[in-house]
Length: 276
Image (cartoon, rainbow, N blue to C red; front, side, top):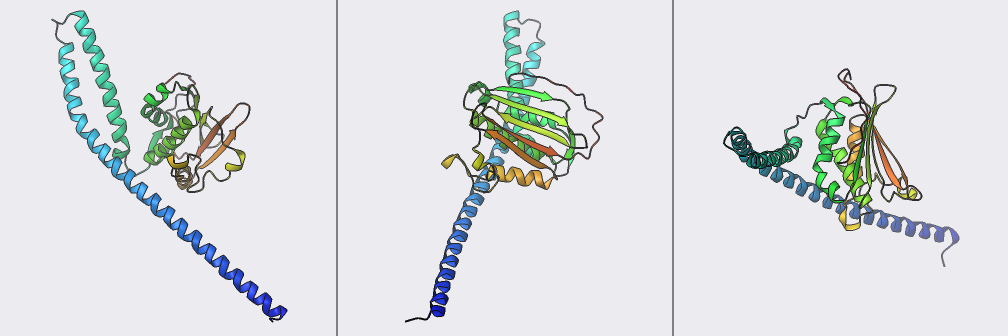
């Protein structure tokens, strides 16, 4: 029989082996998840390049079509009803041109920080989701107390807003409210808030939503969106905060606090509410 000291040694050794085995299993699982995330990222990048190529090719015939419609509008022999149809066609072509421009925007942006109006960037992202917002009957309420000029990497910030607005739409379902606000803090910071009237995030999940691979969307989400958002915001010297409620008046609000290194002298503060 083993002595008490020997028994304790054997027990400790077995525990160490078990812990190492569990640690190795967790490392292997994390490596597998990281590999899957990398594969998804590569697929998304390839898809983005393909979409940009298609959008670029569509842009050329759209320019030609707008030119032809311009010539038609100048034709004095057109009857009023025909002229009205030409105007409607021109408006639809203009919508297509806007969609193409927004699709190409992330691929045209410089990798240098530039002076960016947060209000315009938010509106551009909302325009991408316009159809989805209209189909779900979601109201977009804007309260821009400043245009929020900051010197920043616009492409990175576009990704932040796209993730947050997409999540807000998913959380609301139908007939919700998407609330967007911009204000300047007492210092040089700009505060951007993206809120929704959705189901809210349980309090026990609020501490983990920014961790990689955490998701409540099951097989519909990779669980890296908010993790990427936090990394981008941190990289540009900002911070992100969240408050949420699942009872009473439910909903979630993300506050993105951005540093500003550019003067805001060209700002024309406004406050407006409208439906997308």
